[in-house]
Amino acid sequence: MLLALAEAQSRAGLRPVVGVFLDEREAHVELFDRAAGLGIEAHLIPCAGRWDQSAVDYIRALLERRVTLLHCHGYKADVYGFAAAGRRRIPLIATCHNWPDKRISMRAYAMLDRFILGWFDQVTTPSGYVAATLKRATVVENGIDVARFQNAEPTLRRELPRHEILIGVVGRLVREKGGEVLLRAAKTVLAASPETAFVFVGDGPSRRAWKTLAADLGIGEHVFFTGTRTDMPNVYASLDMLVLPSFEEAMPMCLLEGLAAGRPVIATRVGEVPKLIEPGVTGALIESNDSAALSDAILRFIENTREAQSMGRNGQALIARSFSSDAMARKYLSVYEDALSRRRIEVTVSARKVDAA
Image 1 (cartoon, rainbow, N blue to C red):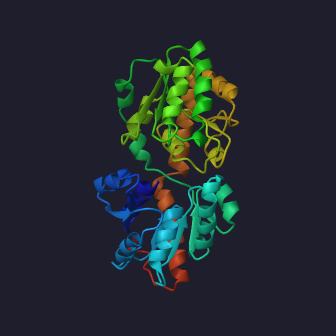
Image 2 (spheres, rainbow, N blue to C red):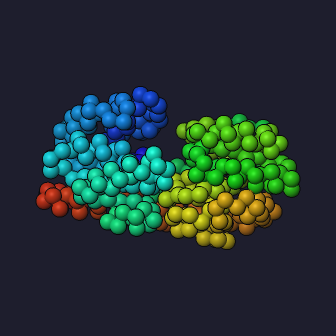
Image 3 (cartoon, rainbow, N blue to C red):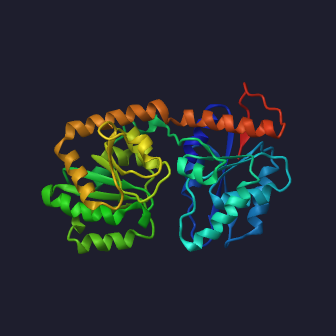
């Protein structure tokens, strides 16, 4: 989402600067690499442990280089961004993509984030649920660069052993994504459609457990784990359908991308998913943690390929019409201008020359 927003902002004449935390305990710099590859100014922010004053100093130095406003994504960015901004008259915008989960270990972060957000000029979220939780947040739906997901080559399909039908899950491999539910549904699906394969695209702490479960269920040779991929348009082009059996979501980017690629979608009725999936029109909705309903929906799509493909085309039209990255960037520009006006900083709207970190 952040990369799609930064690219759209560049097209609109803004100058985005992307800062990515470099956590020494678990270094993930894919976002930095992709931003730099797109020609977007990007910085790695070294950050050791839960609190690192040097990371605050690094961000503060960036802000002093004619940055007009700071847009934070996630509770860690909120805390460090707020500390770095200090008493500067720089507008602060936060996007809460989801709310910290209900684990006890995360409650302290949620409480701190809620306190910090009270000092921000604008708080946005793609989720109506999160907006209701925070009460003062504005809903700005996620958007994607639709053109990237059209006419892509199905390269992932060529990398895997041959199967007639390829069903994909895209996202971080964590319990909340419902991978165990899908694997139990997969066993039923394979009994009726043995030429089907399931592919998990992404990585996370549940990967090993899910791989073990697939073997225990006797379906290991039909289940593949690719790890993180950077060629997502080609991944979606390889799938016959996309499945998202999550227990909770905000507005998942993988659904936006899968629909933009024209894939039929089966997803659970959680978060903002019903805004994207209209049953029988753009896909199928099921209740979470229901492997029987999931297997039934998958088999219906397999047996009715024309109907499934029609849903995929409808979803593609929906994304192009209402969830493009350019539309998202326009909405955020309005948020930025409102925050700037509150700070009484003059900005030339017609020129659109606003620096956004």
